Length: 201
Image (cartoon, rainbow, N blue to C red; front, side, top):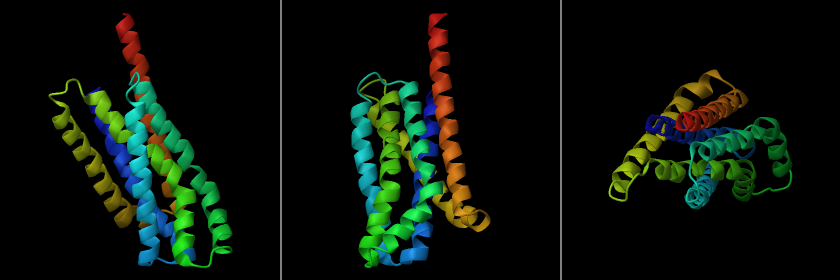
């Protein structure tokens, strides 16, 4: 089960950073790619992740299991996919109403990326809760988990910036990320019910 959790945490880190980089590409046609725009994107993602860590930590206290863990990935997928459908009209609506690129990019980043990033931020603390078996080993488990998750983030940054954006449209990449989250949700939920079946036998 531990390898499954590490795989899911790795994928979560990968998707978060890939989505953050895509955020810059989504906003660029309307607000450019200045330091204001990237400052807005980074601020929204960091604030959203901090809220996700807090919520995920609290949610992990009560009956932590792979079913609930998988539901985080399912929720992230369901909230990411609307970006494919609504990112463009949302950007057009904001662009015609907010002239200042600083506040326009901040508002756009908040509307488009805050909620899915909060959900994805829940992955790390919930992963730690599932992996920790004793207080004595909690530090080592957390360190290993954050290593795997951050490695996923680094590779998500590298692959998105070096390869994905060169060969695929933004919507195609978002769909791939959505499918990755759905796959992780299926894996977690399947393992949960298999584990229940094994316990009964």
